[in-house]
Image 1 (spheres, helix red, strand yellow):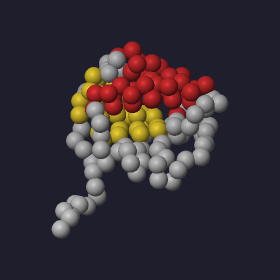
Image 2: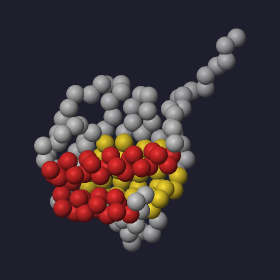
Image 3: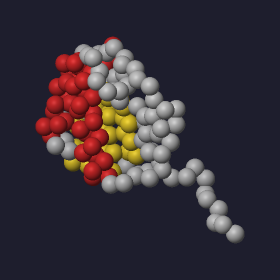
Image 4: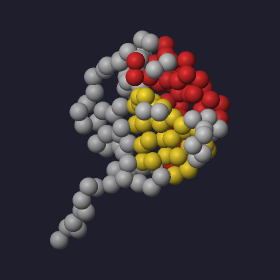
Length: 136
C-alpha cells in the first residue's frame, strides 16, 4: 500500500478461543488483514465505509484523549477493539453503548470493518501453541 495514503489500524485483540486480527485500512478500500499466527491477506473493503472511518477519526481529535469506557470482561474470553492512526490509539471500543458520540461512531465503523474483513477471511482458528501428540 502506498505510504502517501493515510492508513488506519483496526485491531481486535482476540481471546483464548478466537484469534486476534489487525486490519490496515486505506481510504480507497484497500486493506490488509494480519491475523495472529497466520499470513497476511489483502482485502477490498467498501470505500464508503473506509471514508466514514477516516472522517470519524478526524472529527474525534486525538484518539488517545477520548474518554475510556469500561465494561466487565472475562479474563479468558474477553477481547478489546481499538482504532489507531500514526501511533494515536483509541481507548477500547468493545464495550456496548459508549456514552461519548465520537466513541460510538468509531465503534460502529470498527465493527463494520471487522465484520467485512472476517467475511473475506473466512473462519479463523486458534492454532495450538505446541504440537499435539497423537494418542498412543
